[in-house]
Image 1 (spheres, helix red, strand yellow):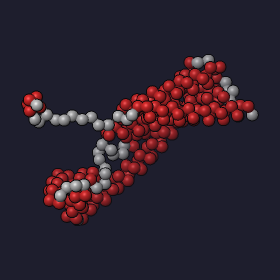
Image 2 (cartoon, one colour):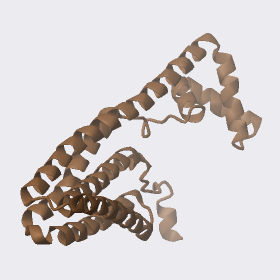
Image 3 (cartoon, one colour):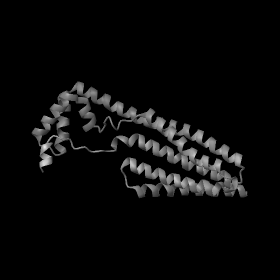
Image 4 (cartoon, helix red, strand yellow):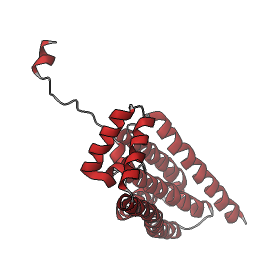
Length: 237
């Protein structure tokens, strides 16, 4: 008690991961897709009795094409979200310009619904409006915050880089193992990589470890198994 009274104004430090969600989602998605798609492609070609050279060519092609596809897809989708957010902010800015008093009452109503009494809600709304009216409406009416704003370039870059990193892992396993052992080695090492990726993603996001690892390995194994089966059918034909 005495120690606590010595520092009555000491800040209570908390560490939250919400600011990481944007880039974390893109990075995990890219790396996971890189491992699964490249390993599946390598296993499919190998199961179809392809030569070691053709397996490597397929893997490298998958790495390059997948990286570009992930970057383009992520940029387009996240940019669409950013455009929508900007349109909402522009509309809100115009509404504040046209009828500031009505917007103030709207903000008061939001705070009342969240549990403040009317007098306090009115005081909070007026102070936040005086400080940053658009920021208050963006955060409390539209749910748009600076930490969670869509960032297309960041998302595209993270997706491309993480896909290439993930794809390089099964490709390296293919390159370093004899052709006769490539299927078990690529499949086994890829599952290990997926488990490690799930663990890292869970740790970075503050989520439970085992469910993330189980998800990554299960769906990765399913994708590789189906692709290898298709390769075997085509090889037999």
